[in-house]
Image (tube, rainbow, N blue to C red; front, side):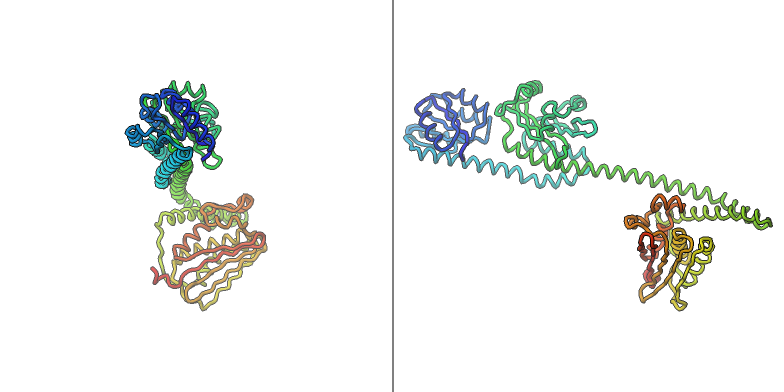
Length: 536
């Protein structure tokens, strides 16, 4: 492959010249070296794809040179050129890791074929190394995605990174959008005081620059760092380092830092960088998901806490208010019987009406609590739905009369009995009909219809009221939910009636539905099984 870099080692200028002319003609980039010391230093300063050694060179130990270079970069391949009298040395060279052998005298074709074969072998080895590193990443990805605790996930990411790359120190820094800083959230081999005190801004230091550029950075003797990074590496006794940004789409999650100490002469390989790059992309998504899970979990705990507080309030309020409310109603009714003047009767009637409304609210709160805790049971008896509806209409007719509304009940007299809890069914009908009266303007019309087949009995309550916006329908049966601020101000209440109606219908193993058109009215309907006794 044209452009690959070759380091030639020999003290013979003729050999260097001939080899260079042959290989440069094939597009390779050649770097000559006339001594072992010079060759190792050049390998330390730059990366090479192949080393061409001449065993007749003045270097005292060609095998030692190759070993030193491979310590710097294990992926480099080599070709040995030797005379026919040096076969034993050549064979030892092959056993020690050389990838091909050329016997002098050689032709240009023989040399280029040996070099091309060794380079192809090197590419294959690199690809195999890459694949071996990538295959475990699939399982790691599944493992990461299964973790919902950020701290556990970060520790696992660092453990895997060190295990796969041989890093001795590692840290995972997360980006804080509010403070615009990177802080260490997990570390291996780093003193705790450094972990706690390290705060890096965008563009500062190695991690800050990697975060800013969103590009990985390798620092070692083969990729000499600039002066600023060199000082930092020397200060921290680091021989080589990999810094990889963690990003999810355009969002910066953090930076993964891996390093080897001065006593470790082998730098990170290209395979290590690729492994870390893929690992970082998977880790970034896993961290983002784990953060979202923790946020949802925290929100759930807060909702649960508020729900418990609400339930406690309902319990206390309903029980503490029922007794004084009963006393208030009792005395008001006595006063109503004793007073004869119209003015007094009007005042007392206003007291009784408000007290009854408060009693209704307290009953709604208690019913909701019983339903939510599963403490409510059905008392199933055969009932006549026509009679139940009429009893409810008798209770609410005064409300409709005050608004000059017309209620039409189309219920056949020959409907068969229905097994249901009469008290709870009355509450369902009362809530739905009262709701229709509340949201239907003066002079409006409310229609009640009942139909039955072999399986179900269907009840519908239609009104000519204000209607419900389409986007509100999905939340209409939620506890304490009310439609629109303007409606809430005009029609007071807790927003429990429809929620209780739904719960009671479902307690009967039925279902409730609503359809509405804004400005034209709504229809609430529910269906109950005619075989509920058998189902129970």
